[in-house]
Image 1 (cartoon, rainbow, N blue to C red):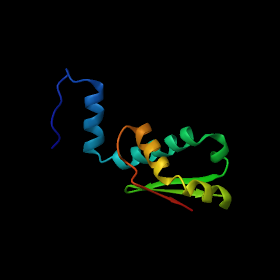
Image 2: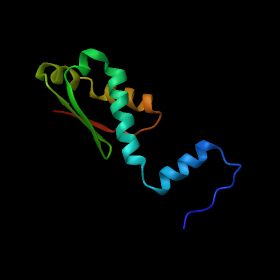
Image 3: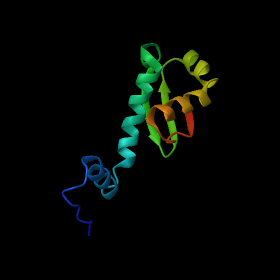
Image 4: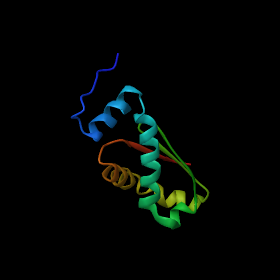
Length: 98
């Protein structure tokens, strides 16, 4: 049974409790990582990005340009640190470019 929250809790505390109780963290992380990718990479990369999926702590990015995939592969560690900095926690530990 879920614990009863008093009326004096903040909305942020209540939302955190709902997210933890209903195991919604994975879905929210997926959305947050996809949004961070779009914000950080800009229109040039987003035009060639087909799909962004987070499975566990690995980010899978499907690109339509092999040249762009090769260029981004050189900066994987920088991409990981940029996304984690944007999200404020260490969610992504590896990037796979397809």
